[in-house]
Image (cartoon, rainbow, N blue to C red; front, side):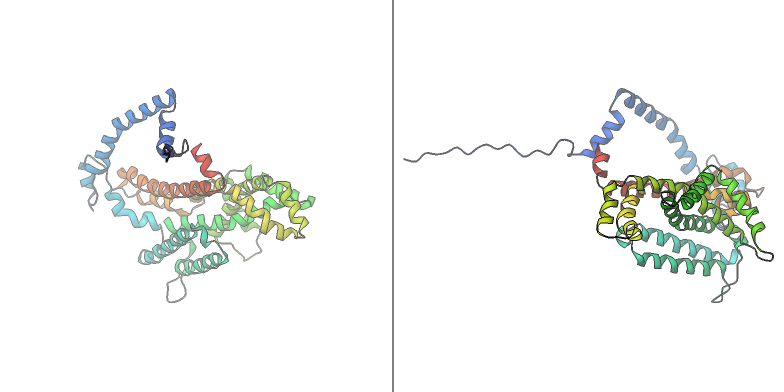
Length: 371
């Protein structure tokens, strides 16, 4: 006689709470998680419904996109994007020689391509440093000329997007090593080095960037030997590097302070020198901790390039302001500035999104994002 055994009934395996459709749950929690959030969400949706249709009609439907005659813009009910089509070369390249704009445009493309390549962390190695050095050489050849048959162009003729982008890249590339050295110097056991680093950081952090640019533009030539002059763009670059380095140094110092003391003791125990311990153990961890905050400072450095217009450099904002001085197109300055604002927003949003991706990829980042 056989006895049949009933098979146990098993319930389907369920996902852990919070892991199924968590992006949708996160959006619901943030927009409608409380009464206050629900009210604010409703008000925001109402504001969009009221303003968005009119803006779309003004910016797209009734807009004038291309016309050499400003009369068409004055008769139109929408935006005059024709001012961008008419003045875009002055807005984007400033006082760079008109017939050489292709060189400035190629320099911008090369720099943007290198920035995109540098975003892939698997490519972060000494080869990337070499690639940036070659990029810098190629960009200087294109911008300065005087070799390979290129007509020479002085830095006083640089302007627009190339100048903005070069100042930004130079600030980050020159400021990050300086920030690391200042952060290490501030934690040094040598009183003289520590005092110098603290003095530099606190003085620069306590002075507006405009004042630093004025000092770099006016004071540096006074300290140079007779007959020796420093290029105006280089002076502005040095001022921006100093300003960025002072703020970034405090962020790096915060990352260093977050490293447990046991890490330092472990480095000493295996016989590593100070340089080896910092380069192989301490700094990689500290920079990983400080990276999200550093990206915020990098975004600010990009926006700070607009301040160089105060010392007479034609960045993209100053070049736009000059372009719309034409009496025929001055009524449509809003459209020109909106175009420049879109450029700044695109760059800053891309860098912010990249910073968020890095933060999520750090240990515990995804858990923090879901929580």
